Length: 338
Ligand code: NAD
Ligand code: LMR
Image (cartoon, protein in one colour):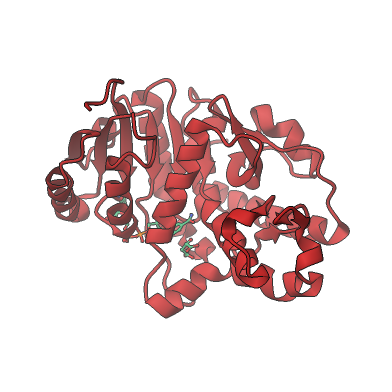
């Protein structure tokens, strides 16, 4: 049956890259927005990446996806973000072995000011933005700062991959299904300082800390999840791509369609409507920080009222301190207004 609703415009930057290739076919097949929503795909690349993106566009056409209303490739940000409802900012350099994601600040941060401005000027009024390109939290902050007419809470950074990694590692350890794991949280930065927290989690309805050992969590689980990106680079010889695309799909699908009572993790702005909730966990305004969130009515809402231990608070504080350092570093590079 032909789709009956109006197409939603989805812009993917870095469409000629690895994540782009793993992401675009899933969007075209309806996994980003649901099986009843047709999509218009706008692919943005730099001139060097245009041919690869054009090749991917040919393959998208060859997929004969019923939900794919159109696919356009451009190196012009104004055209790519024209009328966009969902913007996936993937295009940026990945790190290689031995680098931390923050080492990409200088190379990548300059991409996100102009893209934020183009979103401000050309996107649809309901635009939702997910920043994937690293360092994702600070890049999201830069993009938002250059889009003064877009509510800051519409800019998010991807920590869903970390969340999914945490769920999977916990399930492996407990010899349970990932569907039995609930209530995991990733706090802070998408970096090695992130805090994957199981203290509010359950496995098969039991508190996770009754099923797995607390020492294992602190000594094995936390570093394993926080350093999983580096492990992938070392083993695969390239940055994670399909799992990153999968997490981007999960993030946007949940944002648009709602999470119900379960929460997940997302990098959200700590200003505006989230400021009070972030402050209740000791996190200041003016950052994009991973927090426990539910999506209701198409908006991420920070889960409040969770009691954190002294250990958890120390981890969160360290990751927030790193976010503040990154913000000051991009301010020193004149990449943040003010
Ligand atoms: P890639 O090198 O395969 O592809 C990146 C693409 O972006 C290239 O085709 C390049 O031409 C394009 N590009 C560069 N600058 C651009 C610009 N200004 N506008 C549009 N396109 C541009 O890299 P990848 O593996 O697809 O990774 C992309 C980014 O995602 C990297 O920064 C990587 O570190 C990050 N990443 C983040 C997460 C996360 O969890 N947040 C997970 C995996 C990867
Ligand atoms: C990841 O977490 O896999 C990505 O952010 C890539 C990286 O640099 O680790």
